Length: 384
Image 1: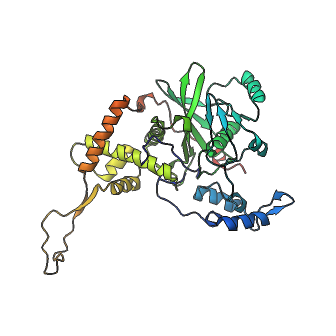
Image 2: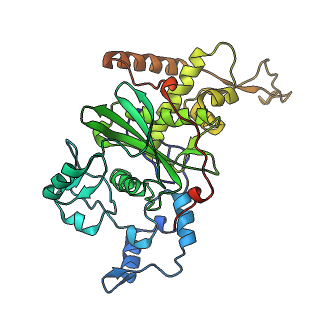
């Protein structure tokens, strides 16, 4: 998903990879070499401005956004690199990892100041301080649907809070390689995790999901901000996405393809969830039952069992063999789920680490005050 399940979870807005899962080959321009991309970039440049390449189609671009999970959809974007030097957000100073399409004038600033509540961005400390003296937002602009100790989750509708959600996408692109940045955020819901203190609700991470996904995805893009990584928040975000799927009485899976870190993070979560269910099970349990109890798809359950070498083919009776060692009877067996000694030993080591750390973060489903929202056709469409 080795990184642990609480590492940064990545995905693209149409999510990719294994916070991950099965990979999908990138199409068209994504496979270009750097030299080819540079040549096309130069050819597309006219009078100092970029023009869309010949054969450009908005419909095709939208389809690419929905399938490839990459920010780089046009040829001239291939060669883009990290364009911001530093970000000041609250008491943290962050160094971006990847390119994010902030306005070009901000790329020339030494530090970009971001309000940790409204996510507005400024190129000078004077303008930022003036904004902070006027900004009265202390939490994400949505409904608080979960609260436990000092952690809360807010649900934000991209159609109702377009500016805030676009700012969130710009910020998250700084730390996600395979991410599609949607300027039209209308078709998405954003679930933001915050930590509360006397000064307000500070953003930890978020995941987005389509209001209506034809493929049944329960996550489109997922991220834990760098300053909060390695604290168990990533696993909590993933667990919350599956808790929503349980309330919807659906099986969910992250959008594909997943990034490498995303794949590691999801694999870690899937492994912990399945092993815990098997240890608590009384008697036999099937893959479909595991999927129903965890809200994971059967494909993800099988993928995890195979990856952990826990799915074995078992034949009940001794098989008679001929002189060549070939099964005479062609007897059929069945696949069984096996908790291996290696998995059990790994689980014990994990418990010991958590005991030293003082436990790990968990969700209390009783604290979730949420019903699946219902949207009109207009609120589910792209606003292009």
